[in-house]
Image (cartoon, rainbow, N blue to C red; front, side, top):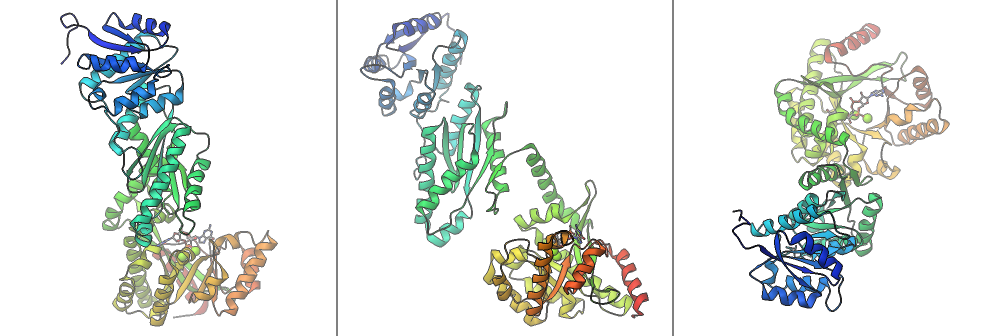
Length: 565
Ligand code: C2E
Ligand code: MG
Ligand code: MG
């Protein structure tokens, strides 16, 4: 309800400032619209507030005053249930004081020297209106564990900062703890709480040094809305260092997403994007910081689309399995001995999508198992079709992702395929990437051991791409080592790379493993590998991955060459 000023008594405003010139200035601005009373220090202000508790619609409060300063007034008001109902705008020229005042419950602030009259009137009017509508934040609601604001309060507050202080460029930061639930599970909730508390304290310390507000939304999700910082990397490091220092016995990994200030972007949107950025860093221990960018936004949209479209892709046969041949290069001429099944997605609108664009995405959320099961089945079927057509078996290897390794039904699924298509176990070879090993060593070792005992052959894919150690090679019961492409890429130019390749081949030979070199693109690379004693090669030099019909031409060529039937 809007009260008409003509018939109502003017509303009562208290101006508190020790300087006469300031009282006068505000008086001139306000007296046309309000009844104004004055106080010269905090003590007088509190007296006046008590006296006019039912009439006062707002207090304009200077922070620096003798006798009793503005902070003390705020503190007293905050703890007084009645006084708390009167909104306070603080008058200040000190940015950090503004924030402290806001944190102590001030509704807003006016900067000195005073802004234009209209601005002040608009702010005063707005705050009165808000408080009448009881939309005003009355007292800060905080999270018990960390003392940071809770989510609702935080957003209310952030909205206010956003609306009234557009000149202030605030960034949104989201902080998460990697695998926080496991930390809780392994070390107990109490430990988890201590971690959260420590992080909360460091965030508070940071808040004291900058202009901003912070919250714990829930669990391990922290949010900070603050003026733009120069270096988010070192900010993250500061928080991380604190945790490392306090909990040296446990690895607590933080990750951070930041959305930098942008014109007309509300806090909710800012934080949504900061969260998206933060989520992108999940599991990436090397790069725990992500700053949201337009490119990222498009990628996000694309990812969402791909996730959405996968179901339909399976139903509408948009997924196609390609085959890339592997040749035994110690034969002359090299001999086609097997193939690798590689997924392709023929999207009706986006065209052909390479696995690099969707496999990592699906690996993150587990959908990869849908793709993999599909590929395994197609591959098994293809082996049996070719066996029927050509009278001999061409083994095909399929890729297993980390997610598959966690699937307790994995072995059963594979065995079922072998049975359904009447294959021998080693017709369907299994490629496991080196990185799966580093993730969950024990489980993987057991699984591979079991699969091999049944008769499957296991190849270690992309060997050397990550942080493989020779240790791991001796632990891992495998049959084939697939050397990562990066080694082959430079063997013609780089003496060191050639040496490395030779070394890997020697070790493999010593361990009775077959070596497959991936990514061979030219004759020179081929002959260097031949000389080095590499057994098998897969690469564009022989052929790109092909759809089955085209792959058949390679088989037929091979049959012609060798008279194999
Ligand atoms: P990968 O298993 O190491 O497969 C070999 C990749 O190297 C293939 O890329 C292949 O096209 C590419 N390649 C082969 N020869 C050459 C060459 O001479 N030069 C160059 N530059 N590249 C070559 P693709 O098909 O794009 O697959 C990329 C990765 O995606 C695969 O690496 C594999 O990790 C994954 N992937 C593909 N299909 C599947 C699948 O069905 N399931 C799972 N889980 N992962 C898959
Ligand atoms: Mg592979
Ligand atoms: Mg590979």
